[in-house]
Length: 245
Ligand code: PEP
Ligand code: MN
Image (cartoon, rainbow, N blue to C red; front, side, top):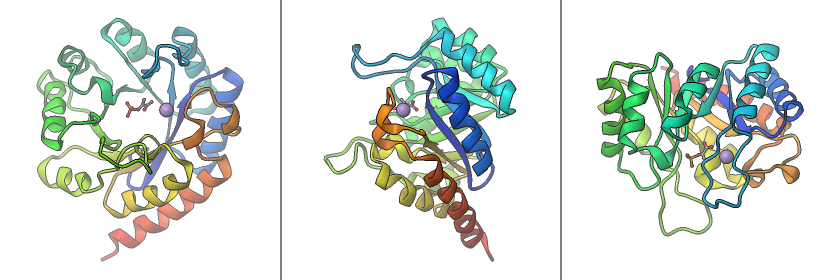
């Protein structure tokens, strides 16, 4: 992940078997990093909340088994130590983008941070949130555009691709795009991933599931492994085209 035009594939962790199947598929397709949610920030308290500590253990085993580095979310202070120990990179989700004490904790961490844009945050607020982490001494922050809330209904959020060139002009931080949470719809994920790379994103983070109808979380936005493979091939070409002299 996070090399130019590269991808991270990701899902909620449901079981070791499920994660291993997906991890093998996405590695073969060329993913550089595996994102799996152990602690899940869910809108409803009645939705699947993640396997928590057991999810982290699964993530560690799949990491060892496949050699793929892993990223997973620290939803609060309480779990930061555990997440930091298990992951190669710690995600701070949209809902926590302005949780300043969590940002300061991330600033004291030796692990890189994937900082998602808040659902209603301006790019300036997002860059200031990143500043909290940098200022505490952690220089390794990657920004992730995941759509902002607007009046539209055809898409879960509105993917703000104009943030990509703006961030690249205003900041030195790498930026990746998450078209899965931005749209909530599988058919929009591939076109917007191609567009993200064309706009200059350093990578995309895409949800993948081999049986999305059975997924406990976000099945409607998950690509099948073969769709992910096609996407990987396409974005390499888009990257070449958009960086050619
Ligand atoms: C996620 O990445 O798992 C997630 C919940 O996304 P966001 O924080 O962007 O809503
Ligand atoms: Mn998800």
